[in-house]
Image (cartoon, rainbow, N blue to C red; front, side, top):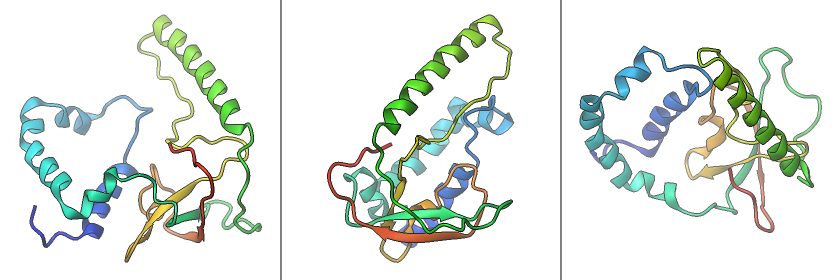
Length: 173
């Protein structure tokens, strides 16, 4: 990969792919093109060069506790929250979320067995949406909070960002 490609350019390309992620929908025409063996073979050298880039070396590093941010996106319908960004303790919210997610998965599997062509929807967020769970995102020097640009199915280009410090052992999703 040419050294001229910056980390920000790489992240913008990744953001494009992340923004169009649709795990909850059946594969579309483009999805089917990208799983063809000849397309995979053509893209493999690009992926290998990308992973060898010094701009992506941090992708396999442990969580960076010193460079975390809370990100609040502006809701396109309701606007900004009247409340300041708040940090909550997770308490048992993650365990409750996990139990509910596993129950939903079992139910959806039964639906899928009964009717394989049925379109089933449900929670699809990569980060668990649990009662009281605080979500943070890493910041990169010269780029800022990655959660501003790397968001599935993004709904807003505006965000409030607040740096935070992580104490203890965070749960990572």
